[in-house]
Image (cartoon, rainbow, N blue to C red; front, side, top):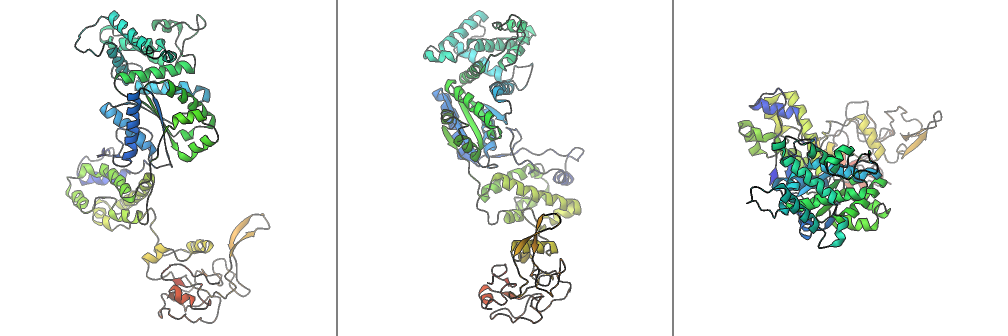
Length: 585
């Protein structure tokens, strides 16, 4: 199944007809966004891509819930392989069907000593949807309400329960959390659970009291913020060290206890509590060390917690080897490994097709669009683009496919602006395909110099698209002393060095662009010349087996025939089967 929301039309654009389609293609590029920064409702998702890895993450989350313990997994791989996309899919899966409570945390940046408090503030902000009032439909209220309902044995038949009875049942439930295992009393903070109860009661009674100030204060305290002494008394919190000092969570231990309480509240709803840390490799060493130590203690104390740490594998392994992650912390964070692989070309093609569907879906009823979709399922990008881009590729990252499609779409936009809508629609399938670069009709002199520096021959794209070689392409004799290796020349005035193509012997041309002794000489003459070196006066005989009618004055020889020339003229001839210059000794 593929989740494909449609793209919005540009502002001021007509809302229907083929003109609206042209306007959408001109104004938007569905391949600009090549990375995921969080679970977005309008994100494109091909669900059978990395399906096994996603099912593994979902199974580990359910295992943490069923075993009532903390579980850690590392989601790692190279950049752009789909790690963030997997986490976003996990968050959408949890929210869509209520199968989990997933907190997606992206690029946490705080001082090492403040990381636990910053983490808690981010978690509570996500659970309250960033609100300061109106908490009735937030995940935090749903978790708190589920905990109270568990205290009442989930008895929905009872319409009214006096608040004193609710408080007694709730207190009894909190007592039972550490009754089976007395060691768990260290992570059961009654103060945190009491604040959660006051939050739920304040929101529940809002319709009657019209006062939500108690809920707002509870959210601030649960986030790790400071409260004035008078505000703390409204929540029944103990005073600070001084009578007039503000009240807040004192240290990392209390921060951990609030997170443990949140994971226990999720268990009341039958949901795993999942913390997803994306792109942790962007943290500094000291930040990563502080985060790993805190998560180690949290995993040990939480009864229903699944922690996913995602990052580039090389960076995480480097931290592991350099002991940024302590052995005990690594054993918990990387208890399980999930490693998404690169995609095959057919899989990458489905990723591209899913993004194209966002564009064409609103216009499938239009006959011009429908007919071209029947002919080419990648319209308006085109099947020709896919054949060119995926040629000779065995596997690639999803980001590579999206980047290639972005360039193909940009060329389609340029052609649409040049031709206009109707002409572009008639001509779109004849647009030159490419993977981001359309070769020119003829190599330039600058291209010749670059090829000379690299030691390569005629580039394959030019040989595929031309029947004759450029006019400036001339062979030279391998016996000429003009052919010399590329070297570095030092400037006596500045002391800097530059790459140069060495000149030939005395008497040869010395112009910077027309050295007759070099194998790549932009010819001044426009007419074809006999196949001989520009630095030699006598024509050279063709090797045996060579074609008798040279193309544009340059014979195209096979490798055996060129080798048969005894090393006299093999350099300078273009091999028909290798499309590269020979390598005479």
